[in-house]
Amino acid sequence: MLRQNNTRIEPDSNGTSNSSESSPNGTAYGAPARNGNVDIQRELNRIEEIILDSLHIPLTRRTLVDEEQLLDQLDLVRLNLPAAFVEAEEIVLQKEEILRQAEQYAEQIIAAAEQRADQILSEMDIVRQAEMEAQQIRQQVQEECRAIQEQTLAEIERMRLQGQQELLQIRARALEEAEDIQNGADDYADRVLGSIEQQLSDMLRVIRNGRQTLQEPTRESGTSQKKS
Image 1: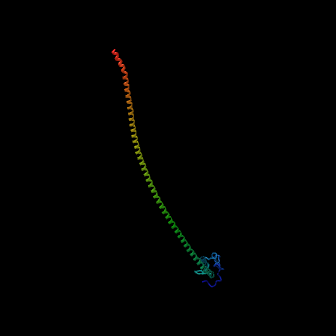
Image 2 (image 1 turned 135 degrees about the horizontal axis):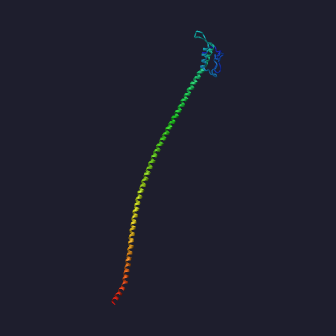
Image 3 (image 1 turned 90 degrees about the horizontal axis):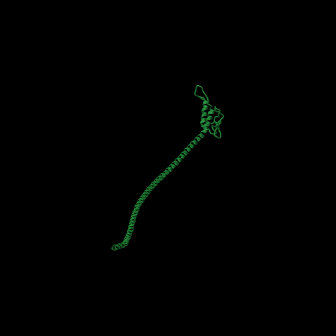
């Protein structure tokens, strides 16, 4: 409890007290620690300074303390304890709020990370599916290309064999035609030569007859000359 005589300590409007006493370092006891808000720890240190700076009784552990100064300082601490408690409570609440916000922010980050991870996994699944489909299409195209290549080679081989067969047939027909032409030419030549031979035979016969005719008068004149 505060002592009954409050004439020495008069808290002002911002929660500090006006005291005429001063601490050993020249600072008035009970003066505001910082801009109207008393630092309880510093005021307790001032109480300790009051006790340590007081007169010691020789050969004893007792000290003569200025009661007024000590009580004024204690009153100052008592008056500001509720404010300090409120400030401490506010700090605790702020700390809890900060922790809550940090936890909420961390949960948001974790949720966003999990969502991003799910999205990445989904994208990876899409990529894997696309790669599988691309591989299937590639294999199908390769198989179709091999089939077309084999079909083309088979068609080329068939056309080559057919061409060779047709060439052989054409060559055989050409040989047959050449043989026919040769045979026809031989027959024609034989006929022509036979005709010429016949004509020559006829001409020889005519020639023989003519010579024979020419030789008969000479033979008759010779006979008549022999008879005469």
